[in-house]
Image (cartoon, rainbow, N blue to C red; front, side, top):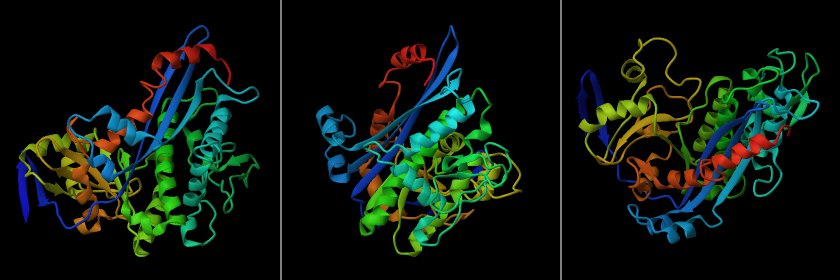
Length: 401
């Protein structure tokens, strides 16, 4: 049964959360953090990025008190359960000898994603190639064209499975990571903080899909038993959105092959979160609302119902408003495979089993919180380890990388 709820001019159609799924067995959660710091005399600015992929299992989570988690149980849960990655970006007045800041960051992005050391063993680079060349269907493809970091012409491309190459226009050296387009926001001798935050978001996605890829290639039958959670929306914007279509293509291909890939994103801020604060109090408990394109444009973005559908080029997940109770209201993202501007519940990949799992993952430390995201955030946070003070000391002590 559906319920109509109205708050001021907002009308939303809520439907009861189905209870026909079964809980998933394995939980993977990714999160990241970015922090920049600067020093004076001479002035330098450095950005630090840390990402983490956390592996959990539902029985272990169920033993933890969601209101008063016992520290030793949490410690046991986290033991040997996380993959972490860290890197540093020279944003101003720091560079590798012989390279400009611009080309230094290009090299750092490539080397960081290719990092062959344990525990990653170049996994994110293999995942990047898997996505960029869409390897899952067995058809050899080149990359799509991208802007060359040397001549700035939109003709750069790499042949199947290549990590490096040369621009067909200027013969400048190319990294596969140039496909993302980090260089498009950098000046020759400086870069904005957004380079660090964008890298963090990209690396989170690569970490998440590294787990998915490894199951797909080695234990495909277990993949439908897994839930992959991302802190944030299932969206990639600006020049980085070239990742979106390959991700959609894989999710649709997997679905057509009989393997649901269960992915969940949670937004804890932004326009959709603010809108939930507006309509959530009037919504019934244990219900969901899936806003369509007209609703999003008119009620959330406050713009005419014209132009391209919301998220057509940037989103690989549909937004879902969820209310379990007055304390647990949240904005979740579910993939749909191919883009669907007005998604229905039946379009949400893995929704039955994900909703059967979510009650075991709710946390009472914060409103609308999920325990896996809280735990992953604790591991990935740069505000506590290393501390901001240590980062500041490091920035002041190092003039070159």
